[in-house]
Length: 144
Image (cartoon, rainbow, N blue to C red; front, side, top):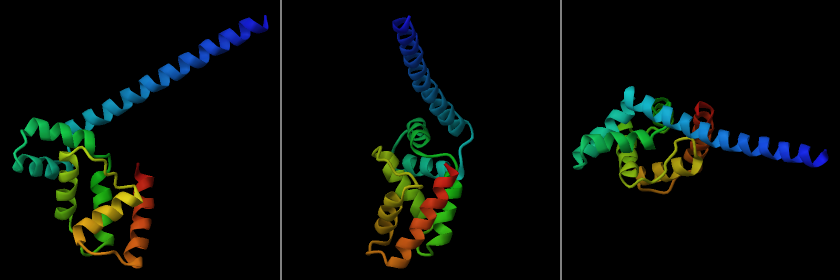
């Protein structure tokens, strides 16, 4: 009797794990389709930048939809409002470059934000800017 219970429990556990991984992939696919159907301003700018660099528009849309997060416009606005030297155009160009090479760059990650701002400004960042980026990353993490 105990062996049957363990067997049934194992079957249920395995099926739940298999279903969870499948459903997570379906959710990710739905998010990508939503981004394709309703592109944000940032996504449109990244697609335009990639197209200007010579990529086919369909390929640029595909790269941008796989790369960009939901609420990316709000995250970019949080960053550009908090750091005065960083413009929306600079961020969009940086994101287009990352999308072109399929390099991860999530705007809710402190390390990615530091790398982005340092690359845009081309100087070492002050403690004040680093503290601002820490608060921006925590605010952006709540949007995810």
